[in-house]
Image (tube, rainbow, N blue to C red; front, side, top):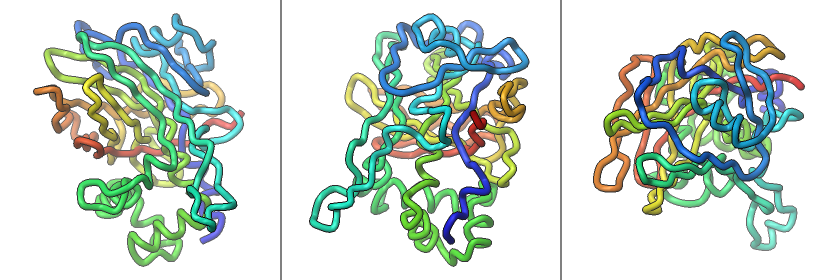
Length: 293
């Protein structure tokens, strides 16, 4: 299955306008946002999105409905930065990937500090979660069994008979598939009457037929970590990236109810969006093509 992902530039350059997708006008937004690590900040004029400077003013504007922040995004590649470098000495017992470094967005919401992160190799393959060997197996199994994602159709067409075969193919190609959904574009974060809302920008219709969001890791000040993602058709954002005319055209609206310090699962009102969530895991993914720069 060598090279099967190259023809689909799956992945990670997205944005959207929260004002155009009905984000609550009176909701409390993420305050004092700070981004650490490689990232891209997009602004918007209401019709198109475009790169702007990486600074506090533009971060705040993006999260308030005027663009998005792509954690671990890079203009030269659709892969997330910081995913890690393959360790050629792993055969001697060392780690599979070294030099892992996630990009983080930190801010406060109703007195609670949240950290939103891109994903690294260890996030995908770090260990058991919800009865699966690792998050990679969990995500792929969920995506494979959900016909709205297009995942099973794609991997079957490439010769994979089941989830394990698909995961083997991904590993054989240097985990490029997961690299390309590990740099989430965060369009907004807010709290509306106790409902935690987060928007992930992506493609409305990706040429590959894939329909899922990228994945974002969320950790609160109590140390509770979860993975958030969405499957199925994205909502139309009403904007597109000026460089390619298609990126940032979709938006995945995720919602979570806060209670007892634990973010519990809450289905999103829009039928096109699904929220997956659990203590240490649960998420979805939408792929979109990164604009060629």
